[in-house]
Image (tube, rainbow, N blue to C red; front, side):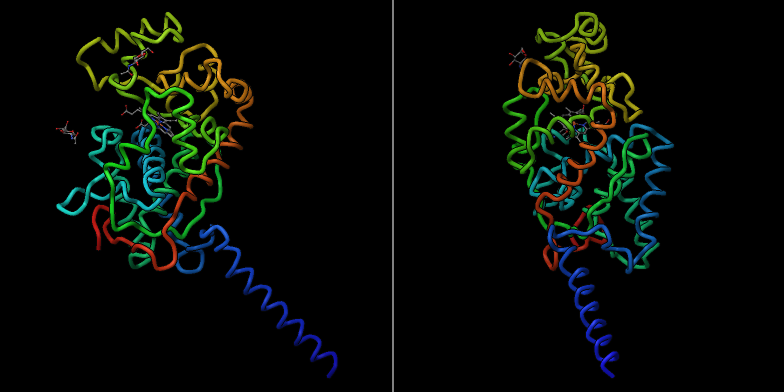
Length: 323
Ligand code: HEM
Ligand SMILES: *[C@@H]1O[C@H](CO)[C@@H](O)[C@H](O)[C@H]1NC(C)=O
Ligand SMILES: *[C@@H]1O[C@H](CO)[C@@H](O)[C@H](O)[C@H]1NC(C)=O
């Protein structure tokens, strides 16, 4: 009897501990990696399948999907606001300067949403979570680090072109301005350097690096010369250059390149131009592990920017418009 009541007390104690672990731990940060584990274990594998197929078809798509998550999170939090198409009441972020004719991958997100809804049987997974998971799966598909994605974000019912224009960093920025735009999101200088390492994959259009090519003095002569032939003073605005020498591989060459004054964007080279971030760039340039570890940590931090949770926002059934 005494034994029984003791074990009953233990059982109750265990239960209450377990319940509180399940109910409080996830909400400490608002998000949890296990959000869909019981309700739809097929969700994450479905996202991964579509990302892998898209990256296999075009390696650059991995870069484009990673950038979508970044441009989403920097504008009123990671809430899929970037995915909303223009309507009379939606001030679409797709038309903001950093996104217009530049952000890409929207069709892949549509395809993921369709597949994941089919796998779960209904519209369960938010577009904001899809962006976060697709970013991780893209990095992995291009040979980079993996991390546990925090989940449970909900989708916005608004968008802001104005905020996209003011809060997404621009390629002509110097280090203090870059530090500011990250600080505004609760991200520090280490996050800035680590996350800029995303430019180890993907491409930039001529109009984003033209001024650097012709007017900067912290650029290697041979590198500037070859860029000028790709990107004349006028025209050819859409010509593409790799953001680093291996734009389909998630390696540490981006940082190695900065040491040689071969950063493509003015904002890239600003991280290694005599300022406070020089040492960290040097560290990452010959320690890919350190870069990978910090990149994963900073991606989780970026993914935690102002998520909508609980009953805020909605789970869009079409990522491009409100329910
Ligand atoms: C630090 C400030 C940053 C600036 C000023 C910046 C700016 C740019 C610009 C101008 C482009 C080229 C766009 C085009 O030509 O259409 C680009 C591409 C890209 N950015 Fe950034 N970026 C920054 C940080 C980041 C961060 C934090 C990430 C992700 C974590 C990121 C991921 C990418 C990727 C993957 C591409 C290539 C996209 C593609 O090939 O489609 N960038 N960025
Ligand atoms: C976006 O790009 C299109 C196509 O180049 C252009 O016609 C339009 O004016 C741009 N929109 C904005 C708001 O800049
Ligand atoms: C172009 O580059 C020069 C030299 O770095 C700089 O002074 C100028 O402000 C830049 N112009 C723009 C529009 O970014």
